[in-house]
Figure (cartoon, rainbow, N blue to C red):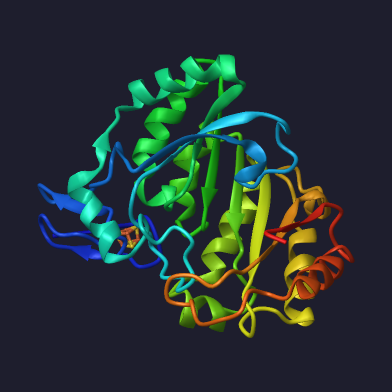
Length: 286
Ligand code: SF4
């Protein structure tokens, strides 16, 4: 048995068992990533789809995902590979692609405008060892690395990746502890700490999905965007107002299939509220 130190859950994992995320196991008394190199999705996407609006716009990026997640968002758009029963079954089915092979594929697609690798679709930080090993090779090939994450990991995990990550989009799913802990089974402070640290090491963008009746008040958006605007770089200069925020529209899905999509007018209204503090606010899914 061993304790996983990747996120706030600090799962105690039995030999051969799995942690809460379904992606980490215990082998020979050590916690390792069971999903290392297990690829469930691979696609060449426009970088704007990550979404990243202000990092190498117009580029394509090879996007790769594995399985497992350490949150439990009932509206997950990628539940087939994140935390459904189907996702857990992927442990035995997903193809293995080595870091070397993935870096090679990324370089192969350079001719089609590819600038590197985006680790996305499921939560990449729960399998950070694969991200680290691949991203190092991608850098050596003169390409870039992008991470799309829920931001739920210890800073020690970020520090291992930081030398290789050029841009990140982190979900800040709401701005109350209640929303994070009750609905998502997450930890808001851990996400905020990671956003603050990432802003000192690479290009950061943030996404907030507006779920009707859950995190859709003007006050909450005002508080979230004010906090973001106060973020400082490594030299202590306030840079937060320039961090792009994507205010995104919810669609019914997975365990929240009974709700209506977010009213588009509300998404626009909340984006305007965010613009009181931030210079680069985008609406998504509208
Ligand atoms: S990363 Fe997974 S195994 Fe590790 S503490 Fe978090 S949920 Fe548990």
